[in-house]
Each structure stands twice: as structure tokens, then as C-alpha cells.
Length: 152
Ligand SMILES: [Zn+2]
Image (cartoon, rainbow, N blue to C red; front, side, top):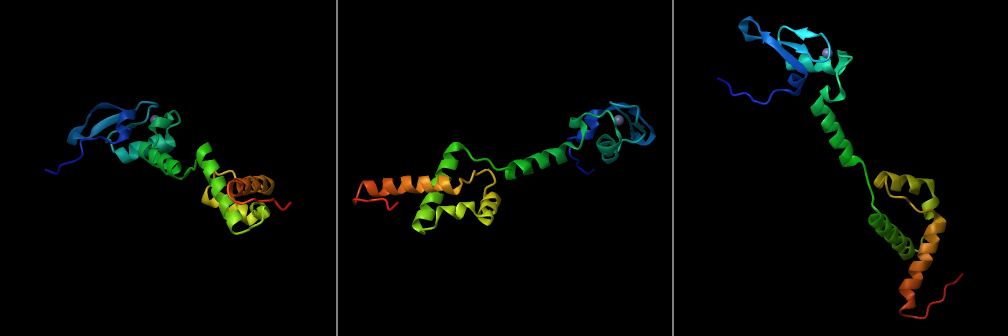
């Protein structure tokens, strides 16, 4: 005999077993409406819950598929906490300072789009904010060593 998974498909949870028919087919009825199947076929039962049953609660609908979808979304839904946001900003300021790129770089729509694609949750500062951070950064970097005078 083939060993089959003992775990019943989730659709079973949403059907009442009414009885066994000849040939050991299980006779089931939807818990939420009067739909019944003389032969319990999890695929059809699930399809009923998913598409045809007006009263089936959300948790009756393709559980696995929903969970997978949620997982996928979670995996891709980006979140940036304050600390990360700050460290990204610092990196960005460093990169701009190092390449002597004008702070208006971050105001460019293509740059904004690029950052959005890379890290959707990162709140890209605008040029003014970057500028003040760049100034702050320069002061930090130079104030300890050489005498540095801001040329502005
Ligand atoms: Zn139903």
C-alpha cells in the first residue's frame, strides 16, 4: 500500500463528514453552505471554498497559497528602522562627499527612482538635507585634524 501523508488537506476542516458512501467515498458537506459532495475531493472542496462558497471565511480559502503569498510579500516588503535609515544616510553622505558629488544628486528623479528600487523603505533625503549632513560630516571629519574652513 502506498504511504500517503496523514495530514489532510486544509479544505477538510471546512467540511463536515456526513458519511461514507459505497466504495468508501466520503460524503461531505460545506460547513458554510449547503453544498455537499458525494465524493470528497480536496481539490474540488478547496475550489468551492475559494470561488463558489459565498459564506466561507477567509481562513477557509486556499490557506497554503495565501500563506505563501504572505511570506513572499513579507520577504520583499522592505522595512528600514531608524538606525538603518541613519546609517544609509551616513553612507550616502560619505559617498557624495568622497566623489565630490553635489547634494542635488538626490533630487534627480532617476536617482530617487534608483533608491526606491533598491530600498523602497529608505527615505531618501532631499538635496537640502543632504547638504546640511555633508556639511556636518565635513566638520566632523576635519574638525579634529586639520584646521578646516568651510568654503561657503
Ligand atoms: Zn460552501
